[in-house]
Image 1 (cartoon, helix red, strand yellow):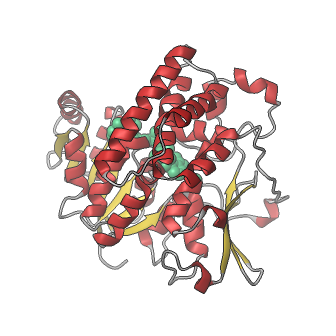
Image 2 (image 1 turned 60 degrees about the vertical axis):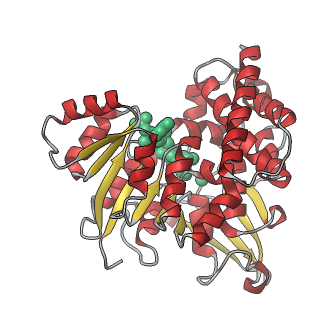
Length: 396
Ligand code: NDP
Ligand code: MG
């Protein structure tokens, strides 16, 4: 990339946001940090503002804006502080922004990411939930508004790297693609005895063996709902059908995903499990730049193993695959239910196995219907959350 990109990082204070700033700090000739957003971690945001001196910062409330200004105490006079949900959308679609890193967690990322898409930005998508919630509407908006969508989720970024350069959506047959292989680590409970699942703690579920990530995605990885969400994400990103996507457990997390071709070739993307690689790839695409990640040391890789995910151990994965087949209303409902259930598990209101129970109950109760408008999707999301909360309340 020759031209400096003006970067807006939605969710700068999170795991992906911090990794993005870590990469960008070594490439100040290519990237200007134009806007940063945070939610609860105001002091972390203040530190980032002081280091990167963005033109704008966004926080959730007027009170948070006041607290941030006090923390900055004139150390970043040129940064304008905005607040509220509309400000997130305004900044993501600001005319001076060229590139948006979408790294807010959960459904809260949908509206600002869509705002970036609708203003034709280069959108680096980490927030998989927005695509699970609104799949077709989101992908249609990308092509309608000339946005450039680059996957940051490591599996999808790996597949993006293994697909033909000229691959366009729904181009599977002419490209000779047999299917995609999404790899999964299996998370911290891959070998845990099944009778111990009900008593695992949030801390155990968050202790991922290979990746360091935010809390919500860590819990999703432990239940393999994360792979289920990624299955749906892959379907929309690459314009394929459910039968074209397979999931395989690869506990070493060295292969980040693969594309199998009809001639028997399998292209895999490998590397150390560090999100700075897909982030640097997305930022610099179609060029390459350093990410700060250590090169893969093959002499230290003792084995590569692969397993089928077991449906008894990981029911959420299969629930998500079925929801994908059932269509938009099911994936919107599942995403909403799962967010509420994970939050309740983190607050020790329900146990780990009950996450799946809540998801199942919501999918059973929500009607399968045609959802084509944003209003319809948001109403369906709200209704699903209400049901999830009622189920959680009963379990408490
Ligand atoms: P974190 O929880 O670490 O960070 C989430 C970010 O979103 C924080 O900046 C947080 O602010 C902000 N945020 C939370 N709630 C709101 C809200 N209601 N409104 C506005 N901002 C909010 O998550 P991760 O960085 O781990 O994940 C971010 C996204 O990227 C998720 O969708 C995840 O699935 C995806 N992803 C993450 C990977 C990883 O390695 N972490 C890998 C692949 C995908 P604050 O911290 O200030 O409260
Ligand atoms: Mg992933």
